[in-house]
Length: 383
Image (cartoon, rainbow, N blue to C red; front, side, top):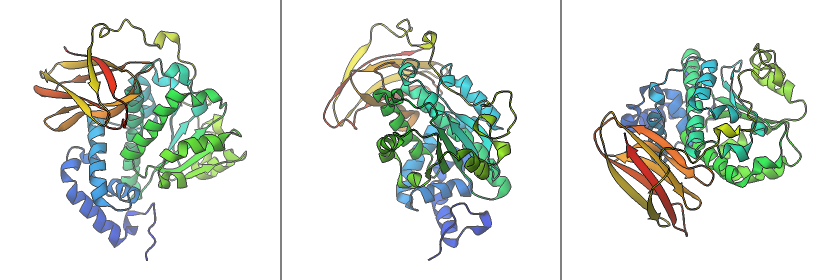
């Protein structure tokens, strides 16, 4: 039995890998045609390795993933550097600065290095400052921008690469386990794994508190077996471990390197409490009279509205309890990605530019609700 290198040079691909890549490419031509940049041997190999070469399982998952990336405009986004990624993410929302994270750069091998100072987040104010979907869009966009850098490096080096994730838990406190945001974070982890299979090369966890084993036990069930295998808890000598893995010149000073920047943390988002000026208030233009619909457990409700090219749909809705999956479809295609929305602290708010005149279907899906139905109060306008 041939043992396959997980990060091979193009010349090291086995005949089995080459055959499977060709088969997957042949069966996903229509998907890849919507995002030509995505159509590389190593992108397809990530899907194959992430799902044990089970092509029938991969195809619908890839369709959802590429569909989501295209709906978010990633196929038209030009990414040139890690500095640009960090700038673009901060420009997506005034609240983005308060969700810790960012691209530190690339390792000495060329892998993208992502730093998340997770313990600097303030969940109780974050939930008041933006809809759930905004966080999902931000994280999906940031990850795909990273993969644009990776695909470019793979083309130059002819070798498969990945993302090195560093999770810094310095300052960890129990507020980070705030139940509503923990639920959203679990949904986010599931979403990212579904869209980006085999994305992490290493996951280093540093500055671990003593209760970390209990915390990890809560999070690990949503991690794939392949992801769990890449998690490594570093001891107090973590700075030397990171330097050995990444290179001192590629790490900002705050984390033990000598990468130059005017700030010791570079341009990594370092979180903090979200100021009240950014919290949601009831003065939004879509507040007021809304339509109420009931969505039974294990079912979905559709709202059909005619859209005119060049105009925008704007929506606002709240769910009576729990969460609901929301998306927009046209002619059997998903044109606004499926996101699981929690509205307990902030209503779901969004907008969508109508590219084609015709009927659009707004889908409120409670198929994941096994027992309880949910009421949704919504307002959708076309302007």
